[in-house]
Image 1: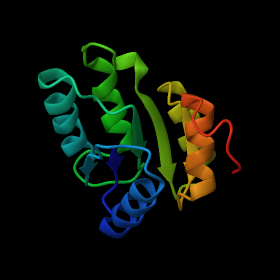
Image 2 (image 1 turned 90 degrees about the horizontal axis):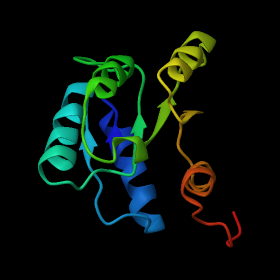
Image 3 (image 1 turned 120 degrees about the horizontal axis):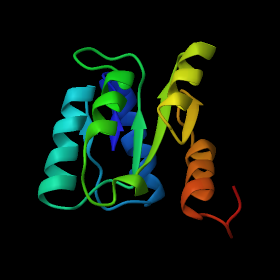
Image 4 (image 1 turned 180 degrees about the horizontal axis):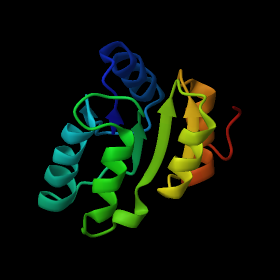
Length: 133
């Protein structure tokens, strides 16, 4: 799942992810509230949760930290299996500390690159272990 209010960023990340062929389903949300709605639809109702959420920090409506606060209060099957990676332009160390407090699995600076995505997949899903980066 991509969660970012920048449509260009979502478009480029979608091209990267689909180009690498690492998922059949890709959910895109332009803010934290849409992401929570997608979580409800795909995790609670249809049980087709994303394995990975790439989450922006600064967004309108509900920002990344607002999403995390609400996400942590949700209760649904296999929630703990979802890997959340903050993907942001923010270099603020406070954002990284806060992300850690919300038990975010990783924090990367934009832009998402092929090497960065491979690193996430290798670290959290043992994907690309036997391929060259």
